[in-house]
Amino acid sequence: MPTLRRLSLAGLALLTTVSGTSMTAAAKPPEPEGLSAAAQVGRTIQRMSLEEKVGQLFVLFAYGPDANLPDARNTKLYGVATPAEVVAKYKPGGWIYFDGRGNVQNPSQVATLSNQLQEAAIGTGLHVPLLIATDQEQGVVTRIGPPATQFGGNMALGATRSTADARTAAAITGRELKAIGIRQDYAPDADVNVNALNPVIGTRSYSSDPKLVSDMAAAQVLGFQRDAGITATAKHFPGHGDTVDDSHNDLPTINHTLEQWNTIDAPPFKAAIKAGIDSIMTAHIVVPALDPSGDPATLSKPILTGVLRKQLGFRGVIVTDGLEMAAVRQKYGDAEVAVRAIEAGVDQLLLPPAPDVQYNAVLDAVRSGRISERRIDESLLRILLLKLKNGVFFQPYVDVAKVPAAMGPAESLATAQKIVDKSITLVKDNAKTLPLSNTPRKILVTGWGVSTTQNLANSLAKRGAVTTVAQTGAAPTDAAIAGSVTKAAENDVTVVLTRKAWDSKVTDKLGKQRKLVNDLMATGKPVIVVAVQDPYDIAYFDTAPTFLATYGYAAVSMESLAKALYGEITPTGKLPVDIPVAGDPLTPLYPFGHGMSW
Image 1 (cartoon, helix red, strand yellow):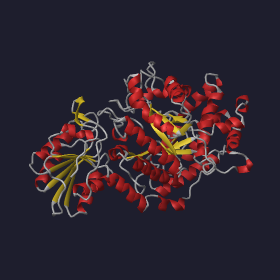
Image 2 (cartoon, helix red, strand yellow):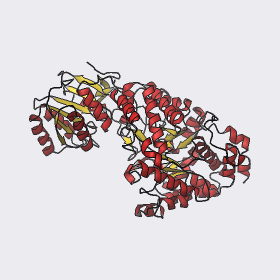
Image 3 (spheres, helix red, strand yellow):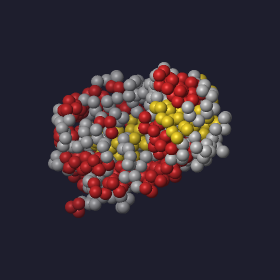
Image 4 (cartoon, one colour):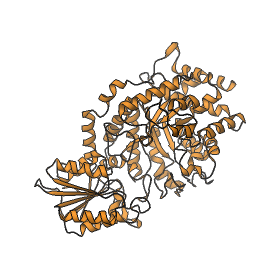
């Protein structure tokens, strides 16, 4: 293959700067058979068939907790029943885990699955391990739950303003992922959430302030890559923070001018690149100022090659957001999407909804000359060098016996709790309800979240409260609201948890969370309103006398909330976003930086 012969070993050595920073001697994996790392990669590429090369560009998943366990859903999607057979069929370069698709039961099981998949990949004869990834953003997007260490998520970190804590959170998260065989985290989210009505980003973003997002994203890149030794992935390029559409269901358009894009959206990605980010994920969004064609960024050569590669100088791996999402499938068929993504500059095709169709479409594009084999080699080289850099190329397996001790050790849990404690934001307390005294009292915990309401009640009970739980859901029925109102009259204080009560399209469809809050306040009993996801909820019941924001609803956040309610900690969180008046996005109700204390 003449194309491959032109990739000299000297050239390969130069390209070990996958993310713009050279591999240090300490980071280099062992050099078997006396060959340099670069030479090993070069030899690997030279012996690969076109089919094997194309397979390496795909990041797949399979249903089930065991690589050797058949699942009819795999057969329907791939034509083979077990995850191991999927690996053998496509020889993919990457793999992704989902908790909702049966991949995650407990850490030891995940570690065993990782080893099984790596054995399948190496056993194909290609001898190239998988780069296993997941979305462990923390907060609302968390695939690996307890006993893994849990944090409050990006916006909670933004509320603390501490880049040191952001780096620590990423380091702890990354080390625990690495222990179970996951070497790539699709994090951090580098979007700047400047739209309070954004249905898909919200608290996944650190802030509406580009500098704060930039500082936090860069800190987390260092935590993941330098401290934990796994690959970080900044997303969603060129910036998904100003949309009212969810790209899982629709194709959003970001109408920022070029100047606005450079001022708002670009800085966090520039900061991540400067910090040495190894991978960047694309967004299925249209940005006319960067490409007027109407193509989503994932399929846009002007955006991915022109802006990301040439203008911003990114040299690492570009991975698509999930190709199963509706936004990227609207304009072209699945086969064309895969080909156009590679033409645009993508290296990895994540979650193809039609694997056979898309795999063969890329092969056909190369065989017909539409895509050169050299172009495939460029992506393959980046992918293999990334595997080399993070150590999976020569050390793909994990020690399952060490997993229990590595997941959620006491020191990490204590550190996480201290970090989340700093995020709790007291937005208002006109009634001077807080902090609660240590006097015994009956507290009703109601509102959204089966486990969230119970976790808060448990934390309050540890502090001497007699608690009642009345979980009402995201769209409470009239009967549920009436039941909570009745219980509120029987208790001394009510804490009502809201989640995305601003979002009439998705969660609070009929304004029922708002009705719940208003009816509870009408009882005349003290009511404490807590937004456990987006802090924007307060705009829809600003008459609530006491309001706090936690930015997350995991148990760790509810424990911090209980500590704040009882005055064990002084609220120090500051709003990382502007909260606008309901229905008037240009008029601030509570500005960026607002936060009360006592």
